[in-house]
Image (cartoon, rainbow, N blue to C red; front, side, top):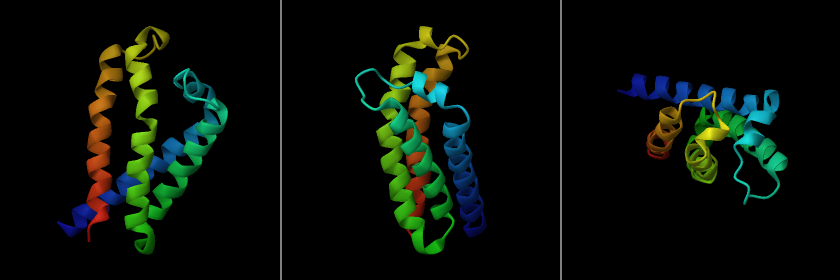
Length: 121
């Protein structure tokens, strides 16, 4: 079980680092999903990208694993409005099937549970 937990931690970390780097490679995509009622779109896209990269890396450093896991949980909660905005406004994202946009919402709960796994020794 311990080997599985370590492998899954690496997978989660890589996922967040890659997702975070994408904020810098394709900021227009992330800007498009920002709900209109949220201020500072560009700044929040960059900040969330930085946090995804930093927390993904920190997850792999034993001294910071628990803190990074809690940070990822907070980040997932913070970005939930953008994913909800996408699902509610699927016509603005014709390249993505609406069912996939809705599927992202419960998937965030899975990611939260996955990160939570690393808050415990």
